[in-house]
Length: 318
Image: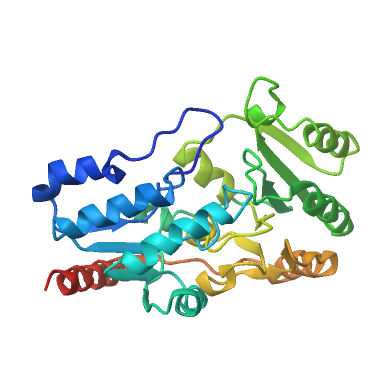
């Protein structure tokens, strides 16, 4: 998805190089951009869109992120959007709120098309694992910049401890504890270990999940809590919807417009609203099981999205 990884060296997609466009413009009709331009300067993006126009190739851009979750400073992504959004022949985004932000910031209209299923369709009908205990999970991943894990986990440890037959699971990538890794965060792991030693949570430290491992993990939860301080949309939320796992998402961004989810107060401007997080957990506990996508609905939605994209492509090619 173009996001820098702390576990391996990342390279920007070669198609973002204007020289690639000049060499291959006869091989494609439409240039559709989703992610991958994190490392591109405004000057490089200007060269890209100029080259596309010179060769008569329309640019379609799906605005997934109005704020890049991998960049602590919003300025770089904002500067990139100031190049790409005005230059695009067609804009797409996932939610009405994001479309309104695009209209306000750039006076551009974006087509609102929902995100398709993330989990393969055959898995959507798979039964969820049976269990008696209510399981809340926080996956801290590699502590990307938009995460505020410890404050959220401390509140969760408290509220989950008050609920009968409930448990809190915290997962985190191994590199967070590795002094040789770019993702090393020496202040986080000891705090999580201390909470685990007190019996307040179960801590699992592991390498990156593959898809099957991730789906099994998500399906093992009753509630997945997203500890985000900023962001826009979430593929994680889509996967949880596919698997029938409830989500507690922050009120920053447009997560609540994306799929049914619980919301709690959490943003860079307002900080963490602890009581709203507690209430989200209690609601998930009382109202389980969560709504789940059906294979029929997701298959129909995907076909409708394919048709909508086909129509948009035809429109920019006229």
